[in-house]
Length: 295
Length: 250
Image 1: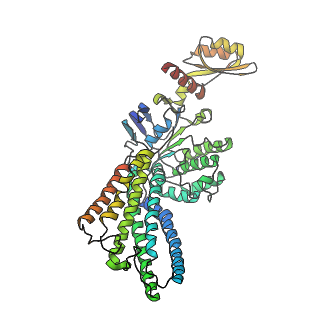
Image 2: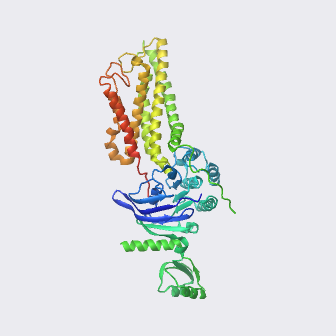
Image 3: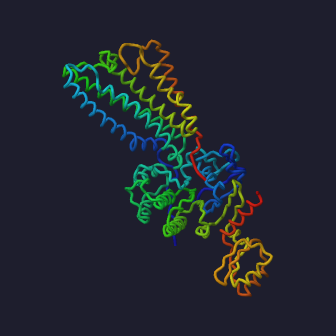
C-alpha cells in the first residue's frame, strides 16, 4: 500500500453565492505526508470535504486514485477524513464505535486502535459525549491512524490535545507511516509543530491556491540569520525581512527571497548562524502579502 | 528498522448497505423496538386488569391502542435516523446510496416486525378475552371484533401503515437536514403524504376500524394510489439523499 494520489483541476465550490474554493488545481503525490495550511476560512476543510465526498464540487474535476470519489464505494471507504467534530456515534460507547468502524473501514485495525486507546488512557466503556475535548481529539486521531485508509486526512484533529499528547500523536503518526505507508494530509494551525513531518506544503488563501510545493524548496525561499542585533541588521539591510525575534542582544531575522551564496558566506564569516526559513514565518508573510494585495 | 506489513484486503466482504443495515438493526432498531413492546404490553395488561375489575364486561381491545405507539415511535426514530446517522454514515466512508437502501430496508423490516408483534399480541389477547367472557372489540367503539376482516388482512394492513409512518419520518428528517428549518417545515405536508395516503386511501369505509381494507369503497384505486405514493416517497427520499452535502465547518 502506497496510498492514493490526489488530483484536482479547476476545482470550485460555493456555499450558496459565497465561493469557498476557486479554481484549485492541485496534485498530491501518493505515499507522502502533505501539509495543508491556510488561515481560518481559507477553504482547507472544504477542500478535504470534497476529497472525502462529503460535498460535491460545483466546478472542475476531482480524482482520488484516478477516480471520481463521489459516491464511489471502493474509493470512499478508503478515504478517511478526521474532523474535529468527530463523526462518531456520540451516544454509544467507544467500543461500540470501534465495532461500527470495523464495519465501515475495510482496513481498520481494531487491535491497533485498542492499543492506542490504552496509550492515550481512553476508557472503552465511555461514550464520546462524556470525553473531554482532548480525549475526543485523541480518539479521532486513533480512528484516523487505525483506519489505515490509503488517503488519510487529519483536519485540526490534534488541536484539543495537550502538548505531550500531541507529541505522542506526531510520533505515532511517523511510526505508523513508516510501517504502513499511505497518503497523509495534515491540516493544522500549529505549523511549527508539524513542519518537520511535512514533505510537501500546500497553502490556501481565501479559497484559492496560494502555493503548493516541496517543503524543502519552500524552506530555501529565504533564510534566518541569528546573531548580535547590529550585525544581523547590517546583513539584512535591503532584504525583505518577514519576521524578527529578539532575545537580549541576540536577534533572529527571517528574510524572504533568493539569497546569493556570497551574502550567506559573508554572514557566516561574521559569526551569524544561517538557517532555513521557518514555515510559519513564510506562511504568515505570504498570506499577509496576499491579503494586502487584495485589499 | 521498521517492517512493512502486508496491507489487508482493500474491500470489505459485505456491501456497505448490508453492513449499515446490520448495525442499524442490531444496535439501534431491534433494541428500541423490543424496548417499546417490553414497556407497552405490560402497561396494557395492567390497565386492562384494572378496567376488568371495575366494569361488568370489557368490550374493547387494549392491545389495539398500542398501534398509535407502534406507528409514531418508529416515525420519530426514522426522523432521528435521517438527521443524526446520515452524516456519521457518510463521514465514515460509506455512500449515500448505501444509506438510502439501509434506511428503507430498516423501515420495511421494522414495520413488518411491529405488525407481527402487534398481531401476535392481539391473538393472545383474543384468547384471554374469550376465556374471561369479554368482547375483543376494536377501539372505535363499534363493538365489532378486531379481526372482523381476517387476521392476515389486518396484519398486512398494520405492516403497510407502520411502513408508511416510517417512510414519512425518513422523508421529514431528510427534508429538514437538507433544506433547513423553514423549508423543512413548509414541506411537512409532503413528508406526511405517504402516511396520509395509506391512512385515507387504503382504509375501508366499513363499520369496523381496520388499518387496511382491500374492499374499501374506492378499491382498488385507493390501494393502488396508496402503494404508488409509498413507492414515490421512496424515490423522493433517494433523490433528496443522493448528493446531499454533509455539514462541515471551515
